[in-house]
Length: 550
Image (cartoon, rainbow, N blue to C red):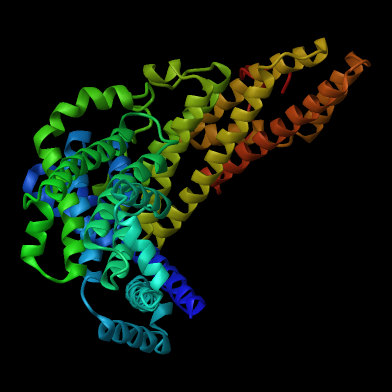
């Protein structure tokens, strides 16, 4: 019996997790660029920001997802951090839609959703790019609710075990434990709503008291805030202030409710629990209201002290020097409405990314002043951030239903974008290797020549990418025509100059020359993507600043 109940609970929990994940993913695909544009335009008034926050939270069912969306919009300079804070605060209220739904007996709706999805699959609607996210979202909702039903049935079977009822009754006095368990589960599940739904399943079968379930929900709200903080741990700069803000308002919001709970519990003064019980006698609905109270408390905290938190946020998540450079200069969401102009703007943004390549070797022409002070890791970070934005922009452009020529142009630029980011990674790796000390004098000389030569080559290529002039592109092709013999010559020269080349320098030699060979190949490939029809022309290389090392 206990094994059956345990398997039923685990199966229900698994289906619930699958449903939550699938619902958030597919609703995010349905919203797509429109959601980002709507969020970006919602900052005109507090009421509109609150509405967008609620709808966004209800659609994604993930405060983490909304936080990341807002962080990307802030990083792209589409909204300020103070404008994003009310949206994030009210998105927490939107996530309560799932908990409220779980508090209602909807087993007939579960069967209807699964049945509708089955007919859609039978009619092959799931193969349609237009309808696939809708059908997948319906299926995910059905699985979510079905998982909830299985959890409830498993919990009902657990109720038949006297020892288990006694265990929960004994642990009811350890109220702090309920808070800690709720926080830990929310950090693992990355969702306070998921933990609250589980508490509903246990409380409706009387395995948890309402007070235990309420404290578990309080703890889950705190835990979900820290989950958001940990999810964004690798992100640096001012945009991370939104994640810190989420932790603060959720912790302070629950920090207001917990003392009220203990005052009520120990003095008998009717406060939170009494107010909730006065609204409904249904245990599941009571827990849903407790969850909603946590989110409302977070919003009230944002309203009361939101603007005063900025100095603290600046200390906990200070802005980075390269943040301005990592923001697109030419791209914006509204540009997609004019596809031909959008492609031109992509060219200009990619030229900015390409112009960063010579900076790895200290060559800083064609760069804005603030870019010239970037260190090597920051160059790669800026390039990757801009490249991701360009990739998302081109993906959205492809979803607009533009004509064939625009789609072909977007596809070419997507390939160019991927190659550009790979080139940045390879050049950064080569620059790191060339900057380290070598045992051999010959290898040290080779490294210096490569730095000088590759810097000049990248500068010439950046000029071609910036101007898109056929003659400049042809020169770029000629300079990158065939470097196999040059690479072999460099390897032999380094080894002939010093027969005592050590094992470590041998490895460095082949690694350096292989990276150089790869970079030159990628530059030639990039020139082909710039203008496939440009013919190679004879160019006087004597007048070009390309050292003999190349």
